[in-house]
Image: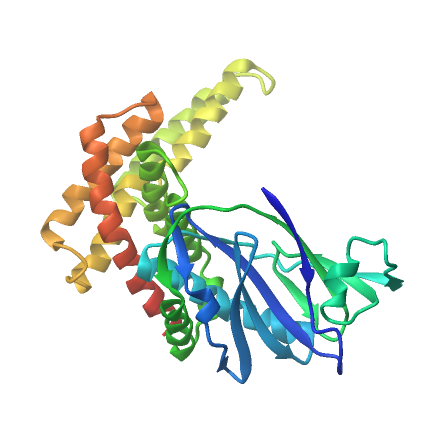
Length: 342
């Protein structure tokens, strides 16, 4: 690990704000040629990409107030998701916007202070605040701010910075890029897909990818006939329950059983997941073979259940499932992403 200290703002001019968003990519990957990244304008704001420790940092300037910067952040998050899906790269960032620490009064830096050599580069003799360079913040760009943070060095294989730029531009061409952040289930599914690329074992990766499919799945109810059967059983249980005192163990056991019985009115997750994914594939046949998707998902979910309940599963089944999920899931999420922001 290494500790980084640097100048964190322009520290002059009129009141204005910048959005500062650090992020990492999964081990073994990088965004290369960031030193050749040309700042560009999007929605009348200037965007640049830089590095800080082992973080990449997007800085967008300038906003008239903090609220405008936070609203823009929703759109920018969609760009990070899109880049993760398009190039199959795990991305991690803070979705919570933190506050800059502003001092009650400027702190004058004397010659013995360790910050002195850093400040001399921009001819400052004092600082007005600081922030953690590893967190998302809205910066008052006119204040003299220091940036602190920890980092590490790693060996990686890269995707060019120009491709990262292209992803941002693509997303901002959609009518409603901010809508993705409002779709909690789709956002969670993409988060899980991205997180899977930080996992080191096949088992953990497999479970995380299946969880991404589960996150997409809406609740669905069983048939009317099945509900009627459940209601009949419940009415019989009411009779047995009323035979026992309110504080008795027998009555509590029956009430617990009734509570579990109520949950049977919802389809099982595996069944709901297959039906939901099948409905998407049926109208987007380019995603995969519609005739085999249900069978494939059933096999994958059965393997997932075995792995979770027994702690182990057939390695070949996990490998086959992983190969399918790594190919199919990002395509599925891309399609849902486009539908949402369009």
